[in-house]
Image 1: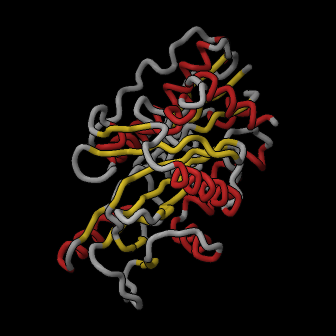
Image 2: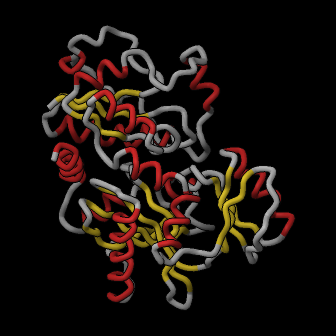
Length: 339
């Protein structure tokens, strides 16, 4: 099968996307597919004719995820600062593929825009469609739907840049951008001074932020495939909370799957994850994040429509717990895209 693994882009999660894409590309090549790993922003400068037959290692230049976010200005300079999202020949090559495996994270790739574009062009792709991607990417909309449907989630507000706060959120507070991921721009504020600094950091990544009460507890995640929940995984950072560094630097977090918690807690998290999957109109696969307070209360934090598939990512570990290796997981996601 001819497969384009689409990664990169110009979101703050670019490096994570490239790592995800590299892993998926290698899995498809190992499984005998004609796969191409393509950076959606930089594109391909050569002749796209016969690209799937080229003998090339498309992941040769993909490195590990660093501790800091990428320099996006430097990336844009590689293309002369081109304003368009799609690099040279990207749409042409995607149009030649039997399916595009979306390995994108963050803005444009995970928020429904590229899904809408591909729908209009008749290009098949993996993951949620335009509607589900849009609803899940905007945490403000997600939180509104959680509350409307009774999904337990921390108390919080949406705050636009320059607007006054009309509701009080108790300290300590979590501040995060509404449309970000990988815990980029997420800060814990214990007092007004830290809160102002946290808002300034979060507003670097968007004009609306989420301010919610910080719940101290154990962190978990639950993947859902085709509407059915996978085993619960626990993430226990050795220091701090589950931030960008602890997500992608090997050895910084202890991950346990299945999570060592009472069965009724696991079943409840899986039930909520499946409910969120349906409420947000998601398709194919997704991953929901949770926190459980010291007194055992479960809160759903958000949904991820294109979960990471890096060496430290959670969904592959959950799939492995039910006997599905990485290559089989990629094949199953591909199958759902064509179903």
